[in-house]
Amino acid sequence: MPGPKDLDPSTSPRALLGSELRFARERAGLTQEELGGPLFVSGSFIGQLESGTRRMQVEYARQIDEILDTGGFFTRNCRAAAKSRYPDHFAEAAEAEAVAKSIREYAPLIIPGLLQTEAYAHEIFRAYEPTATQEVIDHLVDARLDRARLLNDPTTPLFWTVLDEAVLRRPVGGPAVEAEALDHIAALARKHRIIVQVLPFSAGGHSALEGPLKLMAFSDAPPLAYVQGLGTGQLLDDPAKVARHELTYGLITASALSPRDSLALIESVAEDYAHDEHA
Image (tube, rainbow, N blue to C red):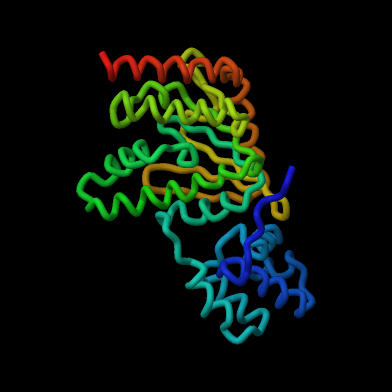
């Protein structure tokens, strides 16, 4: 399977910082673990900074400048790399998602962002921001649709999602919008671009009742897990925590319908919504 798209240091501030960090660290004769020690982070975290998988924060940049004697280079430049179109709690996860070779996601309530249609995304953001101007909503929708272009590549990243049955049964924006959204997912599954399963209500209690989960793997960095709450999110790189969440995802897939039966259910529910719209 092809690896993720490389970030170009000439166009990506994050990639430039990562490239310069690797150069400065190696010039100083330090391993990733040795640089991570005084920062109280793991060597794998330094590797993720160097690969552009993670964004460099100002507090780390200041310490890196001190340790590597780089004359304030990282402090000055990390602000440019920190600019994002996404909410603060999700920005780092979105950036990691863009270079992942595989993404596995459990969605308990809404269709994952990478699979949303324009109309569905608009309804979601309008629900989140009922008093926002149309310009703000349009900006948020555009950013989400840009993220979804990841799936324009025919093979990378591998995208595997488990949708709770609640995702299908909640008609976001009404029957027509939900039908279009489900048809879009079904079309991607039929083209074998994504793997989709549905976790039915009949499965009862399961290992991810506490909320959504995203797992990302990379060709040149350790895996990450992203967990999200209401207006909050946390990107995790601790191997034990990531492994625990990988087990959680495995248990969910074991309780879910097969991809074939899931596709049949998605198309059936979409057809019901279409009939409701024309009734």
